[in-house]
Image (tube, rainbow over all chains, first blue to last red; front, side, top):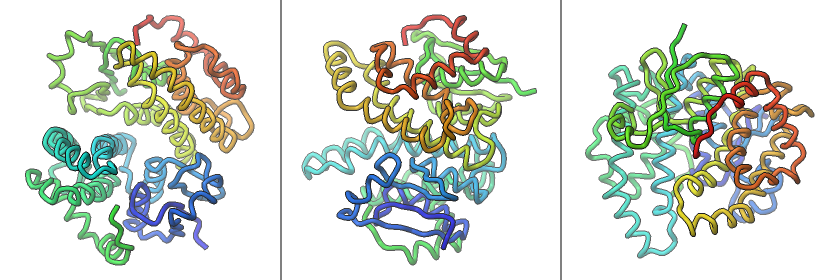
Length: 205
Length: 205
C-alpha cells in the first residue's frame, strides 16, 4: 500500500510527467489509470472534477504541474535551492507555453484542418519556442547536457515527454536543435527511466 | 542582501502578483515599468523577449508565475513544507487558469467582440472557477479565512490579484461566494497590503 496514489487516464497526457518523476526517483506508487468510460462515475471524487490528482497523506492535490513540482521536491529533482528551483520552474513554464501553442493543432478533430494547423505551427511557431528553451539552457545549464545545473531535474523530464509529442507530430522537429536532442537522449539513458519506458504501456498520447 | 529588479509594463497585468508579494514582505525593489513605445528597444534584453522578468543579483528569471513562486518562497509566503507549498500552488494554478481565460479578453480584445466575450465569460466560465477555488479552500483552509493553513500565503495574494481584474468589470461577482469575499477582506486588511494599495497608482490594466 503506497503512500502515493496517482489518479489519471490510461494514457500519457498530463499524468506522464508525474509518472516520470516517480520513475526517476525509483519511488513506488499506485498508478491508478482510468479508461475513458470509467471517468464519468469517478469525476466527482476529484477536487476540481479533473485529473491528474495525487493522493498523499490523506491530501488530494489537483493541477498536473503542481503535482509534478511537489513530487520533484520530495525526491530532490526540483533544484537544490530556491534560485535553482526557480530556474527549473522557468524552463517548465516555458515548455508549458509550447504545449499550449501546439495543442489546438494536435487535438483538432477535422483531419484537413489539423494538417493546416500543424503546418502553420511547425512553420511559424515551433522555432521561437525551441529557441527559448535553448536560451534558458545556455543561461542556467552550466554547459552540461541538463537544463539546470549539472543534474537531471523536472525540466529535463518535462522536455523529454513533450519532445516525444513533437516528434510524433513531425519526426524532424528537433533536427535544428542538437542540444535539445542530446538532452532527451541523456534522460532516456538514465537506468531507472530506461527501465520505466521499456515497461510502460505504449500509448499514442 | 539580495537586490531585486522587476521589469514590466506600466500596469498590473502579470506582474502585480509579484509586486504584492514584495509589498507584503516589505522588500525594497526596483519597479521598472516600460511604456509601450519604450518596450521594443528593451525586448532583446529579456531572455525570452517577454516580461515580467525578475533580476536577482544580476540573474534574470522570466515567466510570471515562476517569479511569483520564487518570491513567495524567499519571503516565507509559500507554506511551511513541501505539501503545504503544493496546496498553495494548486490554488495559485487554479487562479491562473482563471486569469488565462479572462486576461486575454480584457487585455487584448477590442469592442464589440470584447463585450460579447465578457458576457460569455461571466455566464459560462467564471462560476466554475469560483466554485473550484471554494472547493480548494474547503479542503485546505483548516476552517479559517485563508486558503491554506491559518495564515496569509501566496495563494490568497494570487486570488486577490486575479479577482481584482474581474471585480473592476462587475463588483458583484463574489456576492454568492461569502468565503471568497471574507478571504478578500482579510487580505486587504493586512497592513503592508493596505498601505501598498492606497499608494499604488491607478493604471489602465
